[in-house]
Amino acid sequence: MFVKGASSPLGVRSLRYEVQVNRNVDRRYAPAVLWDFEAHGWLVAGFEHCNGRPGDLSPGSCDLTLLSTALPELAGPPAPDGPWLSPHARLGFDHPALHGDTLVHTDLNPANLIVTADGLRIVDWAFTTQAAPWLELAMLAPWLIGSGHTPLQAEQWLAQHPTWADTDPEVVDLFVTGNAAKWARKSQQSNAAWIRDLASWFAAWSAHRGQTT
Image 1 (cartoon, rainbow, N blue to C red):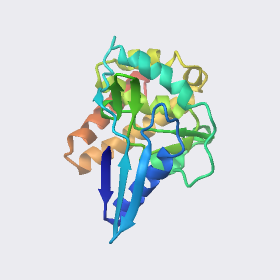
Image 2 (tube, helix red, strand yellow):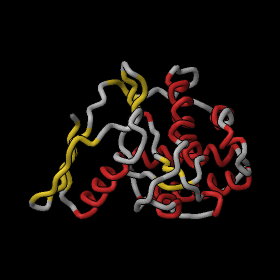
Image 3 (cartoon, one colour):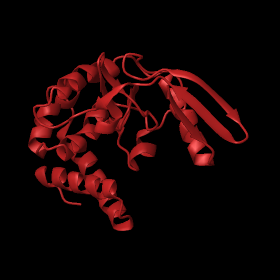
Image 4 (cartoon, rainbow, N blue to C red):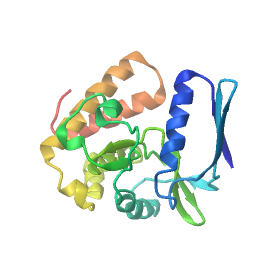
């Protein structure tokens, strides 16, 4: 099993949310919650261990096929009632087209994609958001770019999914511009490599779409 524990108020709240989410998403992909308990200010949870390697999102990778199969299956059932994150809470900006009834992982970076002998498993559902299904694809794009795709190649890969192909380009522009501005601000406030990476990838995507921040 994989055990997580938290004692800070933010950590406990985040882990409690993750436990609840994992009990409401597709068992083929999300690890099962085996147990959880709270004691002496700690929340501890045991998750099913996913034995495998991180996903490879580089151009031509066979893992992209696994992910392409998983995405529409994850977007199938509507979200059950629950205290899910809203698009505004997740992104810091809002638009009516972001809203929907699907539970969206929103952080499909390679480390959260575990390729096992039995197929793809997806971990770390701490940022799951109730939103329109196209948001999952939009949030995946920077990780495709960071894995070696050009912004055009990333969009071409996303376009195989009807939820992306049917999304208003102006709404995509708003999403890209909003994120490019947000991560540019964050990169000025932090030296963390992952923040600088996201700022760079969103900037490249924004430039491809002819947008400015």
